[in-house]
Length: 257
Image (cartoon, rainbow, N blue to C red; front, side):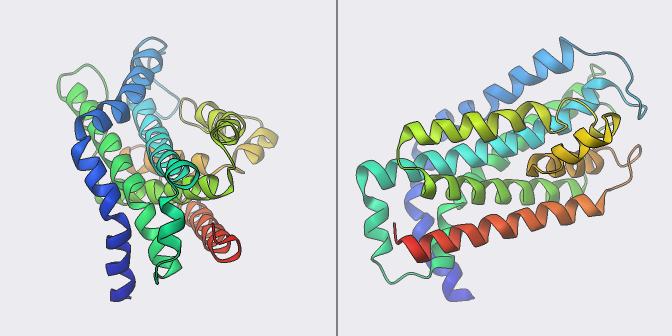
């Protein structure tokens, strides 16, 4: 296990250096979209108190955190791997090294995990600051369970980003994946509304997407005084993570990209 983690660090070293030299650019890109969503949906469309007894701003901030974990983690992992595979061919060179496939998966997903966490916690800190200022979000809590849920979400979506990069044959196919999978999840998976308020048929459809589970657990962990934590959704997200990890491993083992 120690050897795998050490190899994962070696794999991630180049990506971590890239992030260090481009930190401010990465930070701005990570938080700009979530902040715009917060302004547009949290303040532009706020509708007073929700059915769970909290303001809409407090309700929507955890959903945008979940959305940020998807966008930042997925895009960081998939975009960088796509460039390394198709243009620089550096990923092919790495595959020829005597590295464990588990180490490659963990190492290449490290950038997505870190960038996702940065975006999520900067946004959540803004939500807590708004609550402290009496503007909105005063019901939010920073709990260990919230931190754990956010970390798990970033890991799961980093695995998804790696799978998409391994499957994609070009930047155009990656854009198609974003349009067909990521964009619908952005608006339909309970980030801006309560899934439980929908028709059971639509609820069943939305629970086919991992972001729905992420939104449910992050919101419940951020609002412990108003929502019971849905452990079944935590299990569902973990199962999605295992599925994406297994897909990454199979793609690496069988295709030797």
